[in-house]
Length: 129
Picture 1 (spheres, rainbow, N blue to C red):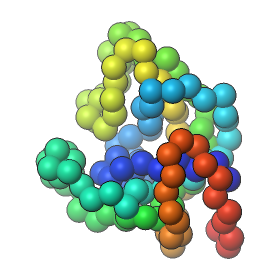
Picture 2: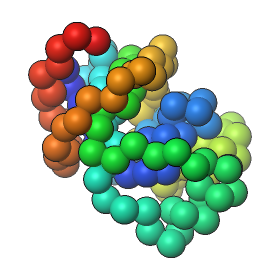
Picture 3: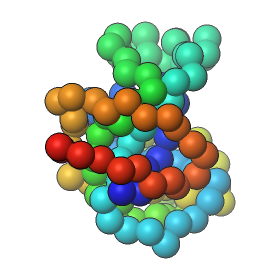
Picture 4: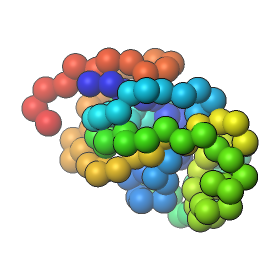
């Protein structure tokens, strides 16, 4: 399954419904099931403040925590930015010219799966989901 590693608290924001777009500097043609892997990287000071703002306390690190459908990859424009709620803005890099990957049908794993993260889209073999 295609997989994307995301830092915390951004990955956790997906599980809480605070984030439906993952912003990236690059476009992908891929559409379909995607696993979200919470990076092992500790929270930076800035990320800790963001987590406090939204009262996010429980984090997974180094685990696959979500399976979703990647349904679109949208070029970020000024008008698209204006249509986003503050939570999306807070949990992404919404500079014009970047891309917003739309995540739908989010399924939170009841038993997160340990995995080593990688950059870009990578393949993860899963069992018993």
